[in-house]
Length: 105
Image 1 (cartoon, helix red, strand yellow):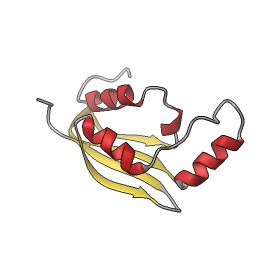
Image 2 (cartoon, one colour):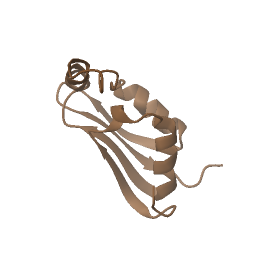
Image 3 (cartoon, rainbow, N blue to C red):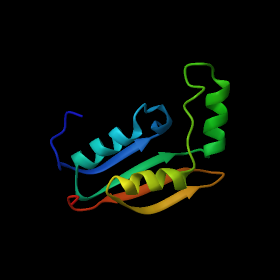
Image 4 (cartoon, helix red, strand yellow):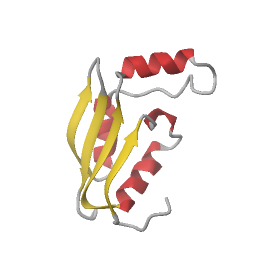
């Protein structure tokens, strides 16, 4: 991303997560641009089941772009140096919120 390291207070990944080809690389880039203490939100205003159903029925272009359970995404986010603050994976929405910790050791 054309943003200097440690310059962002917040990254909001709204309704795009399943379309990312390399999520670990994306998380590393989010970590890079966030200030220590900055927030990351991966958010969909529909449930995982609804999003995945829409994608599988929409045709080849997005049929494999599926959301993983939010708990699995939270583990992935934590493994990239974030502190997970909130995980919601219910019949109304999908949200994983986290905070960038200080520099990794």
